[in-house]
Length: 245
Ligand code: NAD
Image (tube, rainbow, N blue to C red; front, side, top):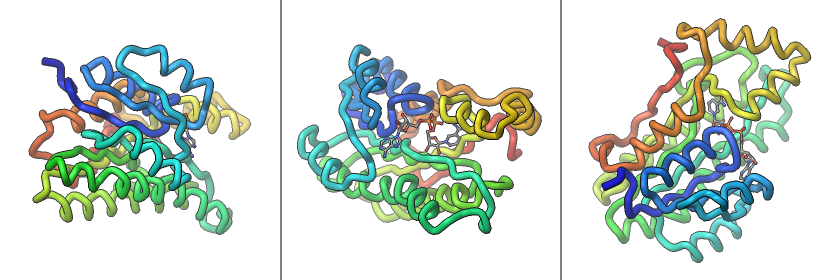
């Protein structure tokens, strides 16, 4: 039997990067994956993959979330992957940027979890996986004020949910990656105006001499989605190539 056989998995921001790799891996391990994103082109690509059903979902839209869950029913696994990196210090951040980052990085997870949890409780099981980062819960990198604050909030929410629902068979874990190769990382590198220098700096802080691959995070997502992690809840799982060790 495959590791995710028979499980209905819902993944947000599955269009590219870590979400995409995770949706593909969960499907390859036998899951039926509802892969969601706001990018139509990425959704069309996802729809061609065996085991993946692509659906448009903006995680900041509460009504759209309710309607999707009404349609697909109770999921066994929710991977809240959507999030955005905000660069800058506290004096460079505006209130609008703070609100946007918290809406997308934190409140969207709150919305998604509120939508799936009643069904999971009724079924007596469920695995919720929230995307955090080492930035915030573990370390405070320079120029990442809003991002780190939002990802630390994800860690707090994860532990609270784990404790509140452990007796109902719900597990809730967070993932805290270091720097991972993804389309938005390359955008951020280009935005510095010195792509090569910025990439060198990211790699320079990695004891392994490289940044992570989305597939290496997808492997952890798959573990947390599967019964292999049945004794694990309320944990922020660091996967950062030793950066914060
Ligand atoms: P990415 O940033 O390249 O892709 C993000 C995806 O999110 C895109 O497909 C985009 O269309 C989608 N998206 C944007 N707004 C959305 C919305 N409102 N609703 C639904 N989908 C939306 O992917 P990534 O770099 O792998 O990052 C994914 C997650 O992992 C984020 O939460 C990020 O903070 C976290 N993370 C990334 C890294 C990294 O180095 N890449 C490290 C730690 C944590």
